[in-house]
Image (cartoon, rainbow, N blue to C red):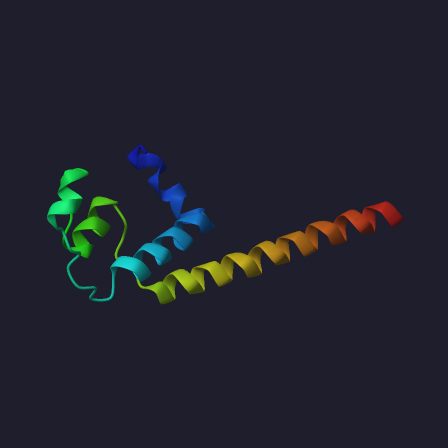
Length: 95
């Protein structure tokens, strides 16, 4: 993604849901991921440290709480926008 468009990703609720899931799985002091000989037969084991994987994905290290609050804000704003749009449409239909 071009750097001048990167800020738009912060307006997407999908970003916060994805980052929250990734931080839940790989953050919060998770121990090293095992890499044994069986897994190397399927390909090299690239990541043993969970935070290396998070940084490889290019995710910001934000807490799950921030992601959850962001998602709640998105729900409230989208519900309010939907309510206002429907109210204006109904008002015009009956005037």
